[in-house]
Length: 331
Image (tube, rainbow, N blue to C red; front, side):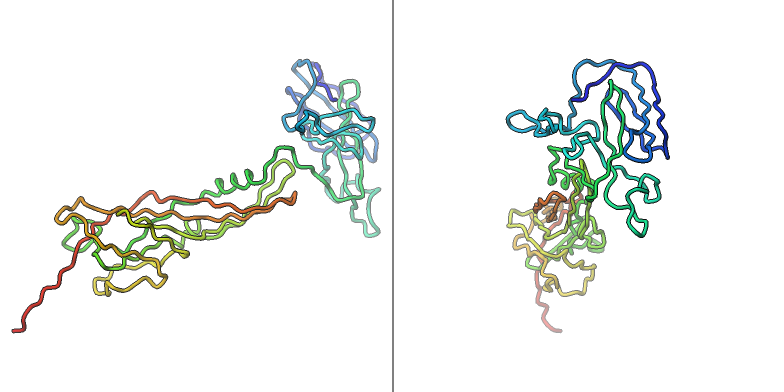
């Protein structure tokens, strides 16, 4: 088990180096800067610490089983934490390791190139604790790079957060009700018995559209497709809401258009009752909600589907009146 240490100095061990590797973060304000050597020798290490902490290091990312064991062991059978800082326990090397992201022209690859000079396998940075000083060794494997998933990383939670970060917009509840010239004080008006077209803004793909998402956390990568699959309009009069599998069709204001015409997309609603006659404040408020279907898969083989909804916020209030036919005798 790796232990925290109490040191108030900086120590640099120089064995020979090619180039600086990325700095490694440690607990309690300690930092480890590494300078890789040319083969499987120790990498030179500079360690700086300014705090004193007793006890053993226990990473919040360490795995555990229901019986309290971590499930990670040294070759001699000693149990260890599965994770230490950004390093995981490698049973292959019997060390804490992480993938070394070295460029193809790095001399560290010189011993591990194919006939065409391309790097083969994977270089790892592995930690050892020598007298409370962290030394980093380069280790090579012929296998592709592997980064274990940090225990406790839930792929669906990662996907749901990615959907939140996408920032879907509230749908706009579009209606074919009009503000009639000369009757502006009545606001949006529609007529009983006439199909009122319904829609949302399909030009805004965050209201209605499809999105591809990818996110990575703790060695786990998730891919997701987010698609708007239906929109539901509540007419506001207590009737059953209308659900459409398209974004609907906008209907621009046209006083000469036949009121009995249905929406070509089939997304419309017909009021059968008027508001209180003569009361301009008696209105029905139309609301809309879009259902988004999220289909996802993760690099550890898991997959699934769930739905999310977005609700309209700026909702039209409509006064539904009645048109009456008056027969006028011919002159």
